[in-house]
Length: 244
Image (tube, rainbow, N blue to C red; front, side, top):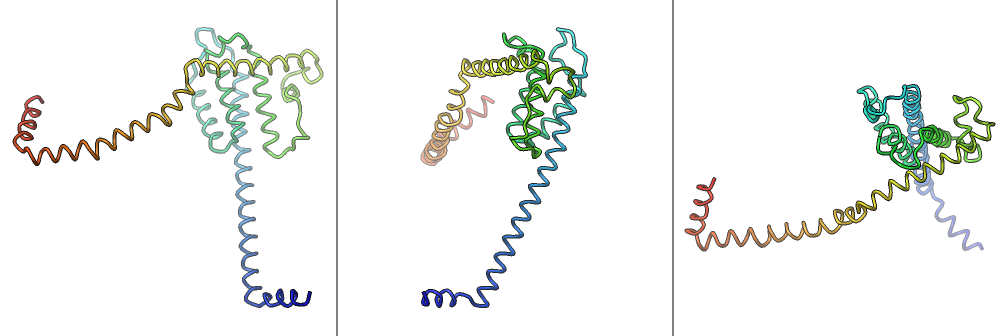
């Protein structure tokens, strides 16, 4: 035991203590800085989420358009969607951004309404899911969560204790899943996944081979032929000039 204590004591020097204090100071600074940045992001996120709430409020308060005007947005609405989407893209989480895209599709895309499972009331429950996600991301724990129909109770009367409203919430959840599944199947029928693999892996390989073949074989051979047969090169250049 004593040799071990003596070995440990040999490392306890003034230089090592000073080095350890510097390391601890740097670690405390980094941890504090990380906490400050995280708090600032959290604070910025709440500001951007208020923009989304304002967008949803305007969507609810806007009177319904005629069938022929569906999908036609005013300039003010376009700007509001752009500002909100850009803010969520920069500051929002992946989940909230995807929910915003779903909300945008359901409120602006006329093709969504052609789906068998679409209903106008679905939009409210998409908004409820967005509000519930916001609650979790601003700091409320999972155990402090509420039901999606309860998230609508602060602006819709008689919904938190209405069994019919609860059934509508379950039906809306089912319909949203079916609409999203149908959109995914549309992508599959257009071979989006196969095209993505082709453009991401196969097409770059052939394009790269062509570029290598061009600059390492075709162009050097062209220069070599021009050096060996200058008259032929001049004649070819003259013919190209005349054709232009």
